[in-house]
Each structure stands twice: as C-alpha cells, then as structure tokens.
Image 1: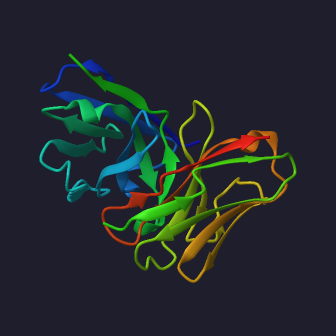
Image 2: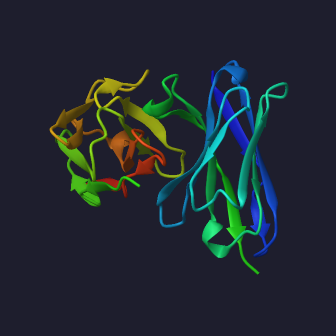
Length: 120
Length: 107
C-alpha cells in the first residue's frame, strides 16, 4: 500500500524558515517524480513544484521558486520542502504527492497533509 | 499560465441523481486533464486521468469525458459518500493548474 506521511508543519513567524518532510513507503521511491501541492484555507489548490526520480531536476511554480526548494533522499525514501522567508500567504496545508508514471497525467497519491500557519 | 474555469462552484443534489461538473481551460490541453475528489477532512484522491481513464479502485459510477475544449466529470447515481470537493487539474503545460473546485452536497 502506497503511503506518504508528511511532517514538519506548525506555527511559524513571518520571515522564518521551515523544512517539511514526507516519508514514502509501499513503492520504489527512486522510480517516481514527486511533487508538493498546497491548499489554502479557502480551499484553493496550488502546485508548488516537482523533483525528478533521481533528484537531478527540479521544477517550481514561478511565484515560489526563489523561496522554496525541493529535495529528496532516495536512500531514506524521503521528500523535502525547504521554505524560506515565509509569508502569511504561505499559510496552507502542504501535500506530498506521487505523480502518475506519465509525468503530465496527474497526481496518483497524496499524503495526509501538514498544516503550516504563518503568523506573528 | 493556463486558467481552469470550473463550474459550478457549488452543487446540491439528491441521492441517486446524476451530477455533472465541468472544466474549461483557457487554451488547448489535449487530454492532460485529471479529476480529484476531496472528502471532508481528507486529502484529495485521484478519480480520473487522461480526461477519461478511471483510476484504480474508483467506482464505475464516476466517468470523465471531453467535448471539444470542455471537460466533464459525471457521477451516476449519487451516493452519500460522494459529498466533498471536486477539482480538475491540467497537466499539459507548466505550471500545472487546478480548477477552483466544486463543493458537492446532498440535498
């Protein structure tokens, strides 16, 4: 059974940094592109970015690429999202997702999400 | 970015009713369209990919279709467990973009 378990969310002050983790199980992690997607309190969904199965390539939403960094450790089957200089508009639930084998086809599996609240 | 116009924003339907949700992209996306269901308090789940292909384990009362540039999700014989928010997503070009969501409730 595919499982994606996020952690690292919480209350953070504006301007701070935060690193989210996602531990994967139930599949060969190093075979798949992985992505982060977030959902605002108003339920708007936004793609954050992707990382290639071997970690050699990343792709980001243009509005986030200067502050967010995606990485992975295939030996630990773990995906990361480093968030820096966070803003109130970054308040959202952050989901780790595994893409379908066809890259453009969508997100086959989602974690349970981790809530990040940016507030002073 | 490709804009995905999803309608309706909310919908109230009766048990066993047929429900249709649509998405209209701002430009051609081929068949790179997927649909997701998010039940209350849960994470989204893939229902349909490639516009018409049912994801593994999804009940056959869900179906996806394309008519020209408009994409539809149809739920036949609505069940209690189908309440939630539904989203479309285009994967044709980066960045992938979601529709605004449709909140489906039982009447």
